[in-house]
Image (tube, rainbow, N blue to C red; front, side):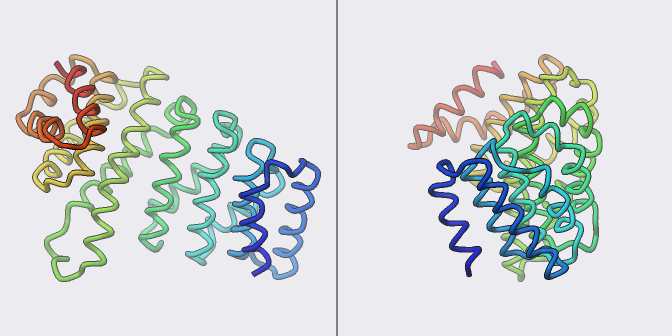
Length: 279
């Protein structure tokens, strides 16, 4: 209860807290972890508030090992909160999060590769991976592109296996969310690929990615179409003329045209932007 209240306070007025007080709060959280001989969800939630409130001044160095313990542990709720904190740290440190990538990314990839982790935890890990790719895209792609693309390709295949779950609305909802998150993660990674000139490494995965998107185009999901339009535009910027055999398929035009005809002004603008890149 106390940690929950402290988190709310830190989110709102953390920018007024000096670095010394922030470090004392981190010490307090760590002391409680040690006394309970485990990383607690409440302590993690409190630290999340500290990240949001203090921003780039937050103490990651001393807290990092406990974050990794949470990611490795069998408490799925704590693991999900830890994944969220990785995103919070990325947002706080921006490109300076690069210092911690060698610690965070392997643990996130391990969660995604595991057959034993809860699917909600995997979804959160995927979100965090995408966030790190936003804030430190060049470093991310230089060190983790191949492993990440393999995992994403496998997840794309999984996300389309809906037939056997027609009577399971919870799983269908999860797969729908997974598909949307996959598109968003591909988008952030694509931007990083351009920054480090690793287009050639990405090319191997392009055919499967377009097969995935073509299948999604049959679902007629407006939110998915919006995300796909952004990814299509970025892919053209990334791969250039090499993408012509894929980008000139009829379903691409159908997706973009449906957005151009939408009453949603943001969707229209995004479709026009993607169309200009493709044309």
